[in-house]
Length: 183
Image 1 (cartoon, rainbow, N blue to C red):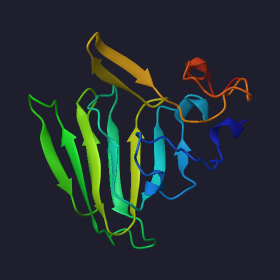
Image 2 (cartoon, one colour; image 1 turned 90 degrees about the vertical axis):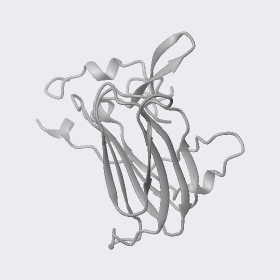
Image 3 (tube, helix red, strand yellow; image 1 turned 90 degrees about the horizontal axis):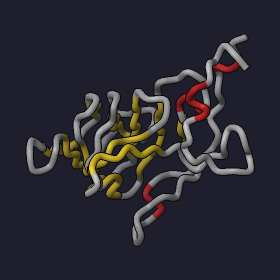
Image 4 (cartoon, rainbow, N blue to C red; image 1 turned 180 degrees about the vertical axis):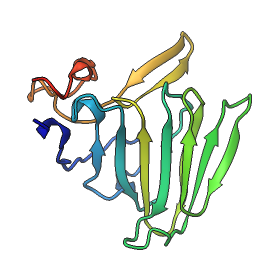
Protein backbone atom coordinates (compact mmCIF):
# COMPACT_ATOMS: atom_id res chain seq x y z
CA UNK A 1 0.00 0.00 0.00
CA UNK A 2 2.82 2.46 0.81
CA UNK A 3 5.40 1.29 -1.74
CA UNK A 4 4.89 4.44 -3.87
CA UNK A 5 6.22 6.48 -0.92
CA UNK A 6 9.67 4.83 -1.07
CA UNK A 7 12.12 5.71 -3.85
CA UNK A 8 15.68 4.42 -4.21
CA UNK A 9 17.92 7.15 -5.64
CA UNK A 10 19.64 6.22 -8.91
CA UNK A 11 23.15 7.38 -9.79
CA UNK A 12 23.05 10.38 -12.13
CA UNK A 13 25.76 11.78 -14.35
CA UNK A 14 24.48 15.28 -15.01
CA UNK A 15 26.99 16.85 -17.39
CA UNK A 16 25.28 20.14 -18.17
CA UNK A 17 27.84 22.94 -18.15
CA UNK A 18 28.24 26.17 -20.09
CA UNK A 19 30.43 25.92 -23.15
CA UNK A 20 34.08 25.98 -22.13
CA UNK A 21 33.41 25.12 -18.46
CA UNK A 22 35.12 22.17 -16.74
CA UNK A 23 32.64 19.30 -16.19
CA UNK A 24 34.90 18.00 -13.38
CA UNK A 25 33.56 20.60 -10.89
CA UNK A 26 31.48 18.02 -9.03
CA UNK A 27 31.98 14.46 -7.78
CA UNK A 28 30.21 11.87 -9.91
CA UNK A 29 27.84 10.20 -9.63
CA UNK A 30 25.39 12.68 -8.14
CA UNK A 31 21.98 12.08 -6.60
CA UNK A 32 18.77 13.98 -7.16
CA UNK A 33 15.25 13.52 -5.88
CA UNK A 34 13.05 14.67 -8.75
CA UNK A 35 9.87 15.27 -6.77
CA UNK A 36 6.46 14.08 -7.93
CA UNK A 37 7.87 12.18 -10.91
CA UNK A 38 9.55 9.81 -8.42
CA UNK A 39 7.16 9.91 -5.44
CA UNK A 40 3.65 10.83 -6.61
CA UNK A 41 2.20 13.81 -4.78
CA UNK A 42 5.56 15.13 -3.57
CA UNK A 43 6.01 18.91 -3.38
CA UNK A 44 9.77 18.76 -2.84
CA UNK A 45 12.80 18.21 -5.05
CA UNK A 46 16.49 18.28 -4.11
CA UNK A 47 19.95 17.64 -5.47
CA UNK A 48 22.88 16.11 -3.58
CA UNK A 49 26.20 17.33 -5.01
CA UNK A 50 29.78 17.61 -3.79
CA UNK A 51 31.68 20.44 -5.48
CA UNK A 52 35.44 19.99 -5.69
CA UNK A 53 36.42 22.87 -8.00
CA UNK A 54 35.31 26.47 -8.52
CA UNK A 55 32.25 26.66 -10.74
CA UNK A 56 29.82 29.36 -11.82
CA UNK A 57 26.71 27.29 -11.18
CA UNK A 58 23.84 29.59 -12.04
CA UNK A 59 24.45 32.82 -13.92
CA UNK A 60 20.83 33.77 -14.64
CA UNK A 61 18.64 35.48 -12.02
CA UNK A 62 15.24 33.83 -11.61
CA UNK A 63 12.49 33.12 -9.08
CA UNK A 64 10.33 30.16 -8.10
CA UNK A 65 6.62 30.06 -7.26
CA UNK A 66 7.54 28.23 -4.02
CA UNK A 67 10.26 28.52 -1.35
CA UNK A 68 13.74 27.19 -2.11
CA UNK A 69 16.48 26.38 0.39
CA UNK A 70 20.18 26.43 -0.53
CA UNK A 71 22.36 24.40 1.81
CA UNK A 72 26.17 24.68 1.89
CA UNK A 73 28.14 22.26 4.11
CA UNK A 74 31.65 20.92 4.23
CA UNK A 75 31.88 17.86 2.00
CA UNK A 76 34.56 16.07 4.00
CA UNK A 77 32.36 13.66 5.93
CA UNK A 78 31.69 13.14 8.77
CA UNK A 79 32.71 16.71 9.71
CA UNK A 80 30.34 18.97 7.75
CA UNK A 81 31.94 21.99 9.48
CA UNK A 82 35.27 21.37 7.72
CA UNK A 83 34.52 24.17 5.25
CA UNK A 84 37.05 26.05 3.12
CA UNK A 85 35.28 27.75 0.23
CA UNK A 86 34.04 31.13 -0.95
CA UNK A 87 30.66 31.22 -2.65
CA UNK A 88 28.83 34.32 -3.88
CA UNK A 89 25.04 34.37 -4.01
CA UNK A 90 22.89 37.29 -5.12
CA UNK A 91 19.43 37.64 -3.57
CA UNK A 92 17.01 40.21 -4.98
CA UNK A 93 16.49 41.66 -8.42
CA UNK A 94 19.66 43.04 -9.99
CA UNK A 95 19.32 46.76 -10.58
CA UNK A 96 16.65 47.09 -7.89
CA UNK A 97 17.11 45.48 -4.46
CA UNK A 98 19.85 42.88 -5.04
CA UNK A 99 22.34 42.04 -2.31
CA UNK A 100 25.42 39.85 -2.74
CA UNK A 101 26.24 37.43 0.07
CA UNK A 102 29.61 35.73 0.46
CA UNK A 103 29.36 32.29 2.04
CA UNK A 104 32.53 31.15 3.84
CA UNK A 105 31.13 28.70 6.41
CA UNK A 106 28.29 26.15 6.60
CA UNK A 107 25.12 28.04 5.73
CA UNK A 108 21.48 27.56 4.81
CA UNK A 109 19.65 30.22 2.81
CA UNK A 110 15.87 30.45 2.46
CA UNK A 111 14.73 31.98 -0.79
CA UNK A 112 11.02 32.82 -0.31
CA UNK A 113 8.60 32.22 -3.18
CA UNK A 114 8.93 34.79 -5.98
CA UNK A 115 12.16 36.34 -4.66
CA UNK A 116 14.80 36.75 -7.36
CA UNK A 117 18.13 35.05 -6.75
CA UNK A 118 21.37 34.24 -8.55
CA UNK A 119 24.01 34.43 -9.85
CA UNK A 120 25.47 31.64 -7.70
CA UNK A 121 29.23 31.34 -8.06
CA UNK A 122 31.48 28.83 -6.27
CA UNK A 123 34.52 31.14 -6.54
CA UNK A 124 36.98 29.19 -4.35
CA UNK A 125 36.71 25.54 -3.38
CA UNK A 126 39.76 24.58 -1.29
CA UNK A 127 37.89 21.66 0.35
CA UNK A 128 34.85 19.80 -0.98
CA UNK A 129 31.46 21.51 -0.52
CA UNK A 130 28.26 19.51 -0.08
CA UNK A 131 25.52 21.51 -1.81
CA UNK A 132 21.77 21.03 -1.84
CA UNK A 133 19.18 23.11 -3.63
CA UNK A 134 15.83 22.05 -2.18
CA UNK A 135 12.75 23.53 -3.82
CA UNK A 136 9.27 23.03 -2.41
CA UNK A 137 7.79 22.18 -5.81
CA UNK A 138 6.81 18.89 -7.48
CA UNK A 139 9.30 19.55 -10.33
CA UNK A 140 12.29 21.89 -10.47
CA UNK A 141 11.54 25.04 -12.39
CA UNK A 142 11.87 28.76 -12.34
CA UNK A 143 10.44 31.96 -13.76
CA UNK A 144 12.92 33.84 -15.93
CA UNK A 145 12.55 37.36 -17.30
CA UNK A 146 12.86 37.30 -21.09
CA UNK A 147 12.42 40.08 -23.66
CA UNK A 148 8.95 38.63 -24.32
CA UNK A 149 8.08 38.78 -20.60
CA UNK A 150 8.30 36.29 -17.70
CA UNK A 151 8.72 32.67 -18.84
CA UNK A 152 8.25 29.61 -16.63
CA UNK A 153 10.75 26.84 -17.44
CA UNK A 154 11.03 23.37 -15.90
CA UNK A 155 13.83 20.82 -15.84
CA UNK A 156 13.53 17.28 -14.51
CA UNK A 157 17.07 16.13 -15.27
CA UNK A 158 18.54 13.65 -17.73
CA UNK A 159 16.16 10.90 -16.62
CA UNK A 160 13.89 8.64 -18.65
CA UNK A 161 10.22 9.50 -18.97
CA UNK A 162 8.16 7.75 -16.32
CA UNK A 163 5.73 6.52 -18.99
CA UNK A 164 8.17 5.74 -21.83
CA UNK A 165 11.61 4.48 -20.69
CA UNK A 166 12.98 4.96 -24.24
CA UNK A 167 12.30 8.70 -24.10
CA UNK A 168 14.10 11.35 -22.00
CA UNK A 169 11.87 13.34 -19.65
CA UNK A 170 10.72 16.53 -21.35
CA UNK A 171 9.03 18.00 -18.23
CA UNK A 172 5.56 17.65 -19.76
CA UNK A 173 4.07 17.48 -16.25
CA UNK A 174 1.84 14.43 -16.75
CA UNK A 175 3.47 12.62 -13.80
CA UNK A 176 2.69 15.59 -11.53
CA UNK A 177 -1.00 14.70 -11.59
CA UNK A 178 -0.52 11.22 -10.09
CA UNK A 179 -1.73 10.39 -6.60
CA UNK A 180 0.35 8.04 -4.46
CA UNK A 181 -2.83 6.23 -3.34
CA UNK A 182 -3.86 5.11 -6.86
CA UNK A 183 -2.24 3.20 -9.72
